[in-house]
Image (cartoon, rainbow, N blue to C red; front, side):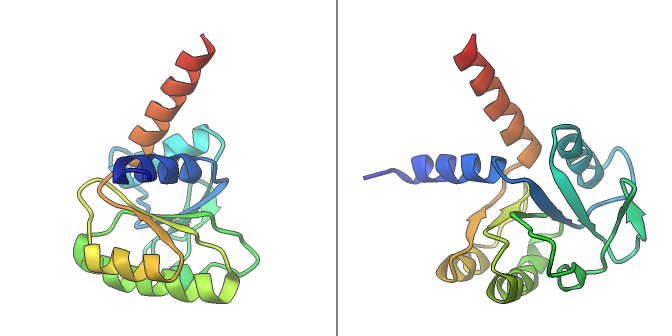
Length: 152
């Protein structure tokens, strides 16, 4: 039997093997976590799909108004959320809709300080895993450090 922490760690490892991450709430402003975390992920080989209704482009990439505006031929592995907890329920609804129609979006990652247990439970019931209240950049750095420690 695995503990909740072991299960979470496996889910984090699975998320870190992703190639394409849609970032809901991606920012155009350097210095904001919603800009700097995706920029870090790009530097580490991830494809980022920025979602921000107020931007045309972020990181020289088309920014989409919403998750539903992202073309179906883009395969999204992880949905990284930089929006207030109060918006998570609606975001989860849009992820469930995409997951059902396109069969991608296997993981929702809610950044540090963002949590909605009811929405996470609803996502889980539809086969979408959820990481809450954790920074994807910090998880990547820890994972990378662990991998290099194992090598050396």
